Amino acid sequence: MAAKRGGRKYGKSASRSVKSAMRRRKSGTLRRGKSGHGGKVTSREQAIAIGLSEARKKGAKVPKKKSSSRRKKSSSRSKS
Image (cartoon, rainbow, N blue to C red; front, side, top):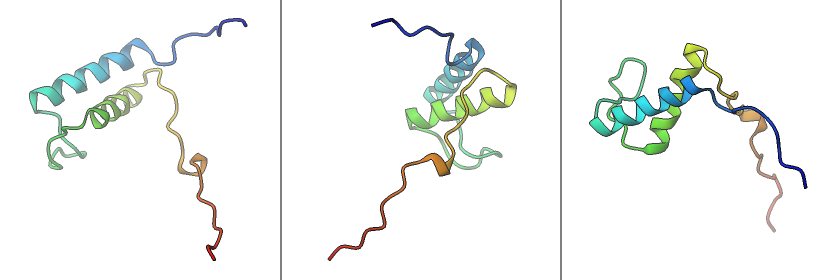
């Protein structure tokens, strides 16, 4: 079985943005929302999401977000 070949999925600047967001979360200055009035971010996952979002805005190499249409749809079977 051959090993998968390919480049980095995320760019170096993207990882720097995530690292910065994680540090801001830890120091308590990372906040939700555009204006920053949404409250403190305490979730690790939310901090990563914010870091990747900021990286996307800067034009870093970040894979596209999964759209809602690609998500798994629940079956509409009726229970009897």
